[in-house]
Length: 485
Image (cartoon, rainbow, N blue to C red; front, side):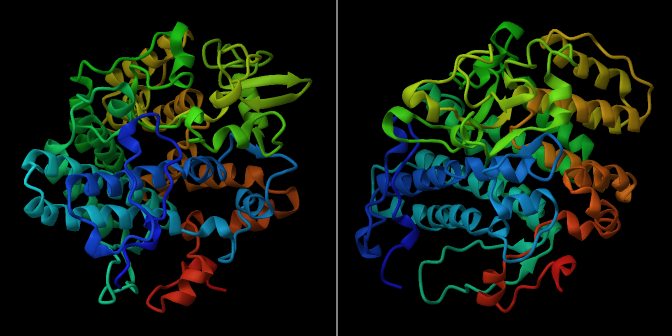
């Protein structure tokens, strides 16, 4: 395969700095590339760009099957079917191609960067290790999404750069994939950047050590390794670069973004035609996605005592019984001032922020029966939001429900809710799967609730099918048995 990756036909859409504008030229043959550290950084930036361009997809992957989102008249049929758990392998939503595009960019960097160092004598060992560490982070983040969405997935660790590449790998078990990415993250964490770039956009938009720690904590929590999660979270808490935004500035998390609380977020700048997908999915005239009735009851002034995170901040009221998602369209927490001009497409997509990590801590502590400590963390988040502290009975279920509720209030529409619910449904050998099923079928027409409730007692139905095109292309893949009709 003489020509460099076809997927390198990339045009950067979302940087607001030169650091994200280093893109490889289209149609470049391999012999003309991989000559300098700038070539390495160009491909790494393509990985960032490709991942960031998935923001609408990440939003839907994390919210569509949960309970805070409802479709409007312009919701696509495929997305409506997913929301109703009426999913078939031909549904475009089941495609994993965008994640593997990111994986391939990262594999290119990991393989070729050491060879470039032998050619480019200005390419220091420090620069090499730092850039490669970022590639490992992005690849690991992509795989963490993949295993939570599909469970078992092909573990591709080599770039598709020659005719000798094995394009037809079978799925690897979820635990094998997770072991690989945890090993990669731990081996490369110390080489990651340390919030020392010249701009805040780079410090928040590139994979720092704290981003590694947050991802490792998230993976540990997913695997129910609570002590491990706390170890990684402690490193973030010791970092003075991060602090919870005060309640008066909570909305600055989303406008203008890159706040003191932010750990890692994909960057957008509409002034440079680097546009996100979230304004178009949630603004008033899009008629694609709105807050669900549950969300209205959580955030609406008529029902809720939420001031900081409530109506006008997380959601906005635009008419009688008519609400929109506000985090990505507003420029202030008033539910009225819509982002103007190029700012409409400049809302960053937050992957990790400190409140998210602290609520991970509360979950880990409560599962270790350290209830007093967990309650302090929950009430720290509530205090920041100017709502009253809670008292809870000291048992795991009560804390699990309270933390799920607090995460919904704090992190609504940030692509977290489905994965939080799925973690709950899997915990302790599926002890509470009935609660997850109840939430899933809340989006389903009443005529289908009973049948779907019975079908979803099989946890394989909580994951997506392998898209039919992938099955046809790669005969070594097997279909999730739930969808193998």
